[in-house]
Length: 276
Image (cartoon, rainbow, N blue to C red):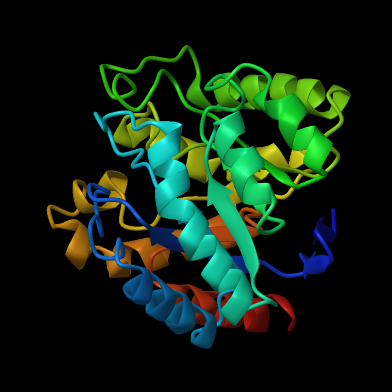
């Protein structure tokens, strides 16, 4: 897949792209509470666009380990003003929305076209994927073992790479039979995986190219970096950048990041190496 159609916008995936994270939450692991205010959210979107973001991924419910569930109504209350204002001020930026609720999808789809980033791969709300198919929006299918409240309770696999690959093969086949034509896959770093599981997936990320779908990676400032390096999320940008370069070498097409400028620079350097 060389491009995605998001409403009337076309996202060129000839080269990797950057998806900037905007958490309009109060409890996300790295930046929770910073962007609940609408003006601060819009200022952050402006900053990410200025730094070269191709996509802005907006979420209103934290998916960190042990994160509490929030009602879809609260998601809509947090998301709708931001998406409406982003669309008004930055009509050319491609929006992604991190949700798995049909009511949220329906409420927001009236304001803008967007990529649907579903961490539950359809398990969070019955009929969600069929609802996405009706919109024609692109869809991110992610692997998660359990739920955010249980996913880090001693996750086990026979073979993490094979198990995640088999899961995504089944999911992509099922998703496409439901009428979603544009599918992005995400192996779900940190979602029901130990540190060793995460690095095994990254080492063998290129095997996921077998699915012939763009690969999204969410490595930014995660515990697989800061726990291994004995630092904090705030001190983990260098480790994030190192892993982004490896992910690009293994076929990642979308980097989902907190730090847009660093990710754009990493892609620029990667392109220079691979174009010569």
